[in-house]
Image 1: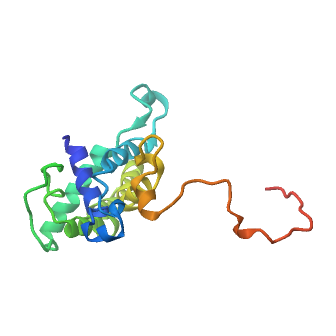
Image 2: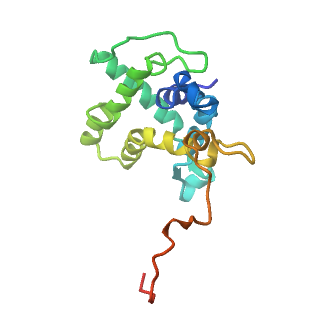
Image 3: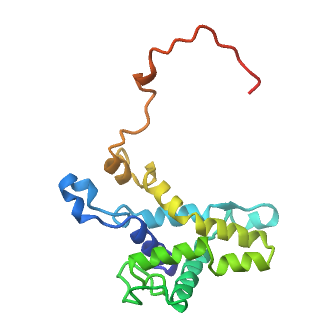
Length: 196
């Protein structure tokens, strides 16, 4: 397991954990994001977040930001530890995780480290001192990680061919439809096109 994928696995485990306590609701409610391969899908999305232009496009279609975000998660974990805000301290990482400080935190402390990326952590302090567009992009991406993980989880990205994704099954979402007869009955007498 690579450092980047292992760090994202720890992120996914914190945001979409296994929930064996929900087994009474059905077997689809027990597995978490790791079982759906969510970390791989999120790494792919993060790596394709910024497209390349000009000479940089010779190296590839997109800037691979996942390793930088993984390092940023470790920096946030180190900052959490230095500020003594980690409640459970460091532990041995799970086999699916990398060995960095973010992966060695408890689920709750990993969420606290994520919070540092949004509010008053090292990235926010750096963005106040330096006016770098790339730093702003990484800061935006890092603070949007919870939304991105959940978006990918509840999309069709993690679905097998011809199947609904695990998130869709848990939410009992039937998938896209041409429309539902919910709003039938609101008649429109006339309709005019506008400039939009």
